[in-house]
Length: 402
View 1 (cartoon, rainbow, N blue to C red):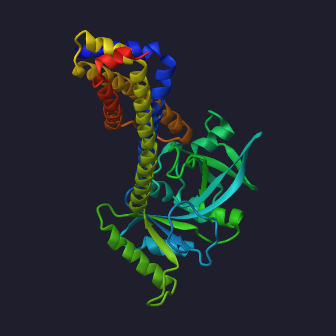
View 2: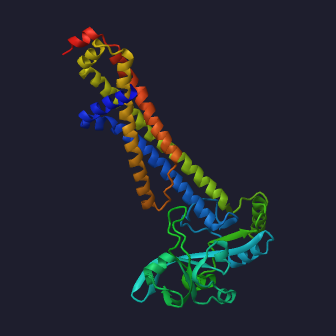
View 3: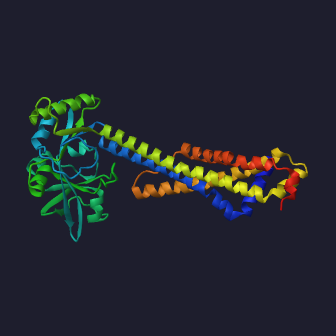
């Protein structure tokens, strides 16, 4: 009986192709939007987690100014750090490695090629603290950092812009007015937590960047790798106490610096992603409600158009239950067709958005299954009333209908 009802439903659907397509369009949009939003949100969360893990879960970042998350705002704090502050932090027992960071932006030239990229000034500890491996060459030496030698490390994007697929190690490039030797090629890392290209950079000894590019002794931030397995909260307190003492901050006065735990940043960003994905998915789910109303409306029209057919079926012995099943199955089939198309469209949109935003494509089978099941529920709920109306028709009155 059910198979016969499905066969009749498919015949009715394909007999009115345009009307059927418009009927299921709301379900398609709703299912596609929900799947795309959830999948993109999960991909974004995975990207944030991977970015923080690539830096290291035992990393804290010391910055001048008030506490804040996200990329630097570009404002200039009144009291920057110096290399002496970084040296003082390195004496703490909780610090495994310390990397002072001085940043700049400059045009880098090799032969006829040039690119504007981010310049990071740091020490030989930068690679360890940033958890960055090498695809070729070597790291700075301590003597090169102390002397401010004209050597540099280059990221994969900067390498591609200047050398193409060639090997940059041993070549001379010009960073602004500085001619320096490329001694190391960094391994690729991809996009960061905020979508920035982490591989578009050149790393130079911090003293060289301070003297020749920035013309000061400022340090923008200090990255601290903590001892493995230590108490992060206690370590942060030690860093705060040291910096309050060095910056002569009195009892009861607010800090003019911040210490950020990267695990805390990851947790915050994932929470934001979850909330936004939930809100957008809730808005998208409204389309399913609209699609269900569309199905009910079309099914009511179908019952009216087929009143005489229903009367004939009832007159020759069909029961009300059989008529109800026929129209209910037709509504469910319409809804399920919309669900299948919506799943395909939603996954396609999520894949395209992932490629565009450089985030992982991480479809969740549970979300796909729930969206498909919900589309079936929409068909049952909104198809029941028209089906019941058809089943309750009086055969005599139905046969008189023109």
